[in-house]
Image 1 (cartoon, helix red, strand yellow):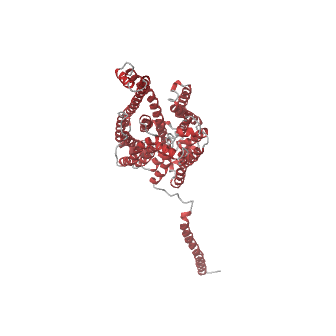
Image 2 (cartoon, one colour):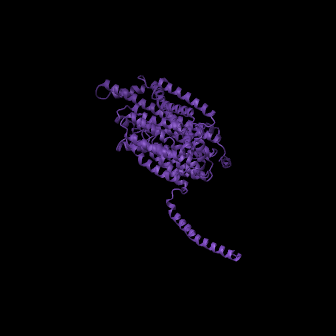
Image 3 (cartoon, one colour):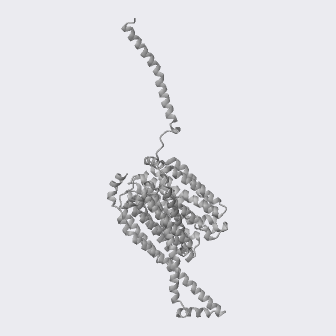
Length: 563
């Protein structure tokens, strides 16, 4: 039997052996740790790098700029497209209409799609498909195929605008959101201004197909950078699980898609087909009214609707949407009227008219970041929006005083004033609109907001195109009552022309024809001036809405509760 002393010695020897065995293990752990540090840059399983939100903002804005540019870049090229594809100008107009219809359908449901797929995946897929279908548009051999690819392009790109707004709203705290929205505002304001200019220059110097091909390198760059920098926020994971666990609201999706698609067709083709004098317009207007009414009723009854219309119960969100609807109706209306006025009344070609409007875009790029900076310094966004609307109304009143003898600067300056006003309004509104909306609903809110902006543009163009033609007829009839064969000044004018050498009857006919042409031009000029006064009146009527927004002093506290 071993003694107690022997046992102790044996235990000590065993511990020594264990220590000797453990020493290599500790060395192995140190080696593994060193290897892990070396391999860390190549480890795909490590936590994703968090990029500065300004880098994220600049990257995602590239996609928005590309998509908004495509809403106007094809306008100038339309005669070339129709001619090369053996189609009439009316048939070629479906290249524009089809894109707007597809955009209108996808905008309100983009929030739900984001929730199902994840915002990063949806944004990447949208940019990728938009780029692919842009290439397909450029390769289209027939008008039918071009229109089809434009529909797919519009469906792919429609979600880019609301996705970017939601990304910016989540990436920046409220104190810095003004500058972020300023960057976004530059994209959505400058792109429509540059669109006709770029489209005209590309078409004149190359081919209309290149207005679609230029999206390919931009889209590929955007996909590459977005994969690197964009990550879904934490709350999106819960929203994704929730959305995937719910049944799809197919009825709501169908009603909204049908209602908005038919409404866009009515707005785009109404003036061309004499509105409700056309059975085509009556049919589509009826379908739109029934579908949209049904969609509103259905979505308000569902617990988990595909479009959350209950967000409109929040006062700030409701009035911001109404302000943006009216603001973009007037902006797009003016964007439609000015190039037409320059070309139809003053003899500018398309490229020159586009370049004449370009300084407004340059000034906007300089001005909008300053507006964002003012918001971050605590300026009242409601007062800024009010001041901007006063400036905008002034610019429209200035345009209403134009005549056929004005210089080019007299066209450029009021347009600069107008786009400056839009920047002063849009940035504060884009900042305020998300203050009282929970972050979990930011995608839905951004989709509705973008829909209001785009529909406002369609409504504004439809309104002024109709009123321009009808007011011209009214003014021509009014002037015609005072320009008759018995009017003294008319008789003097005709007598002076008849006294010229040659056939008196021919001179008489030419004098009357010239007088009639002059009367038509004056009637059309008065009609243009009337439209600018109408737009001024719309802005003035909207002014009181600004002070129906909630006070900024209460926003910070409520925002913390909501989020």
